Image 1 (cartoon, rainbow, N blue to C red):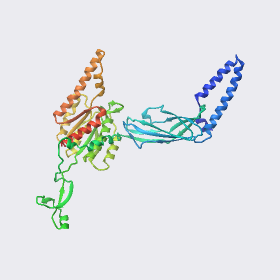
Image 2: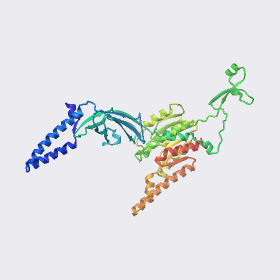
Image 3: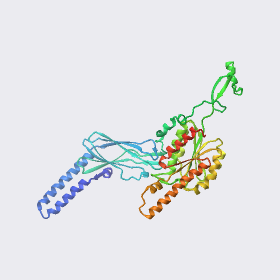
Image 4: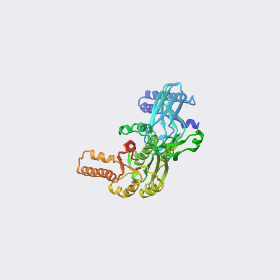
Length: 444
């Protein structure tokens, strides 16, 4: 009985009819015939309601639903969700489906109205776009079923509660894969040359010929073949590339529902995939007051999983970023020349000058690429038409801040530091293009 009470609802149509009967009763005080009509109508409505309730409750499971969720959510992307609903009743059902979405989406009226003929199935698709990483708790699906009479409704609670993790934007990895296979060497007019060197990257054992370095003789192979055999090495092509993410308070500015930190995280995942496909070694670390989430640059099979998991757990501490600590740790731990891609944000020359000493020190031993952001809202303000004196002042100040960004690029270039100034939405593509450009020019 408790289940019946909790799942039964009376529709608006029932109350409209009941209201009509009440009006007829009132009129019946003045015209007796309406009083008799009201009693008949009340009996008819009562009978129809009981018939409607019987139709809805004579089957224990009149509606079935299956929800298909992705294994994990991709931050900032459209994630597809599928609902398959089947009507088990012997009549056409009028359904309303309410999804219990995670609180992060802030959607409390996510309703799908449906009409499904008897014994038929329909499929609904909808997209969810998360704007923050973390854990998302999906509740059950609430289905409200009505018969063609639509006087009463039966509530079904279907599906299972599901917990999904939201990771950095992995859905866009394929969109950038083609860049790893583009023939950049031909574009720059260079020629691929196979050069033999003395690095630790072993290629093969071959017969000794005049001119080979006798220091590479392989005595075990020589004994087996009864002739001189030497080890052949090739010049090591894999270069370490580190993505360094500033997670200080300067990276918390929001653009299109995502913070600059999230844009940097998504770009790091995408470029790490390209780095590994180009046979380089991908690594990452994050910093603010301290260095954290350190992953040594390697090209092993599990590297992408390690980077993805580290990026998923990356959070800000809203503190001022300490570039001196960054320099000290990198100098001690990264001994080979590497490409350092630093995702940060400088709004003014004063902000750059406070950190320029450490960037110049890093550039002595490594190739440093500083990636920072255009303020697209300032660009919108500049392009808008000024209607008042205040609008003119705002436009001039916005142009000043935009010019500061250009000055920062020129200042970095003066000290041999590479830079990418990009809008947040173009961050991933522009960073990948810059990496491929630096690689094709042989700068690292």
